[in-house]
Length: 157
Image (tube, rainbow, N blue to C red; front, side, top):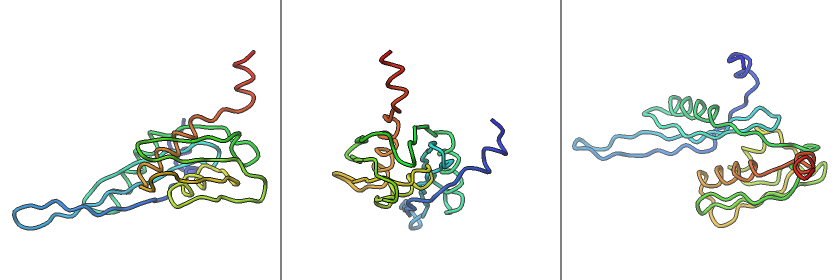
């Protein structure tokens, strides 16, 4: 892969920024953690967490981490090939293919992943928890489980 070419077609979206405080002798030290998703719009997506004293630096670290942890999955006519439930920790995300013109029916963290991955029509529901960290990881876990009809047919033959 060419590094310059790879960077130009990747889209990143900040999902959540959290301010954390460390209590020291002189008071509190504040730092930031950023949760970011990165995708190419053609079925590849990754999420990353970055921590730093300033927000831009935390976002940069998160984008770097997300690029390293990208996964691919099949997209069929702008939606996913079949229903799937992704699980991570207490997070469960139910994803169901939708017909043309439905759009992305999803909450905040899941919506960000669907937009950067190139999915145009999908129905999703977050079950149990809405913690952005667990929801993102559960969504990616579910997308990794997706198999196209051709893959399944090849495996059965």
